[in-house]
Image (tube, rainbow, N blue to C red; front, top):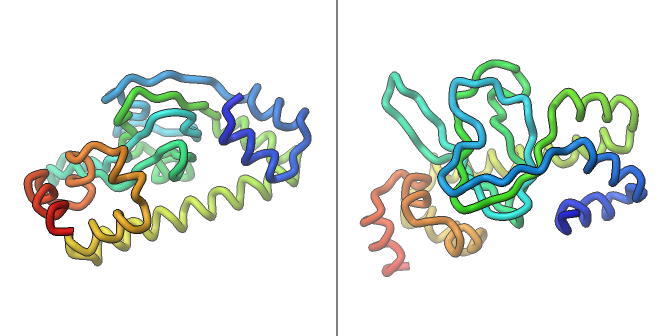
Length: 191
């Protein structure tokens, strides 16, 4: 069993049999670098937990010809991921989840999670806390993308999320920041 998810469940005081049941509901998937886990224009009815490696969420708007990284998911930073615009509305997503390294995830079907939440109120509370935290973190990220000029955004990432600077390829950090890789290189030398 993966240590990070096991630790998270144990810290929530779930008994071993409940933890086992949660893992049995999941499906382990290996994803190659640059492989899409979720493609744009599909319905994303799954929730993923990053066990190893990392992913980026990229917003796609073909009409406006926009492709922009809007979030990163690593095993030790935002490990729960889905395409939120689709997961709750059950409509096609405008995002894609792409591996930025060889990765492993555990995949949970939305219907299985909902069934388990109906059966176990403690799991419902746990799930709700995870989602609330994930939404707050994602919203904070998006506000920084919108509000901060590139130098301040890079400084913010360096200070608060050094794991992104250390493990995410520069081209994706630049795309996330809305700048060219060359400009990012200049920022790194200044900051």
